[in-house]
Image (cartoon, rainbow, N blue to C red; front, side, top):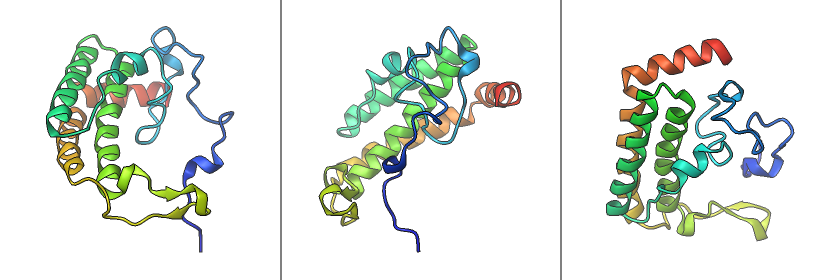
Amino acid sequence: MKKDTPSYLHFNAEKYEWKPEIDYHKHPELYRVGKGEQGVLICEPYKSEIGQYWRFKNEEIALESSEKIFGLFLRYVKENDFVGADMSRKYLQMGFTRARRYFNYKGGKKYDASDNYKLLERGSGDPEKAKSADVFYKKWKEAEELPEYKKMKNEWKEKYG
């Protein structure tokens, strides 16, 4: 049986599609959609443009954050900037997943690094984070369902993978 350990323990930066030294605004053709939130904390200048607004401490902050990021998403779609739109979508998704992690696990820590990465107790986190997660989930799904974004994403994947 496979041991449940964090995927980052076996991370190989050489094989990772996203590189911190690339300016993805100048070289959008190097961007890959990937799976889930991959590349979200690497792809510049979008990481800096979008990430500064990413917050999920409580429902009120999550509402403000998700609205700002969704506004950036819509702007990128309007400007036909798929990379910016997809990165915004990823930040909305990450708002959901990270808030859920903090709801499920105290301090957002899923593993105990000092104990051979033993899985920690689920259900020990902050109930307020569930509200934040719900806020981000709705905006993430709204972004994914926008017809213009869907079209851009399909065209991008056909052209670049």
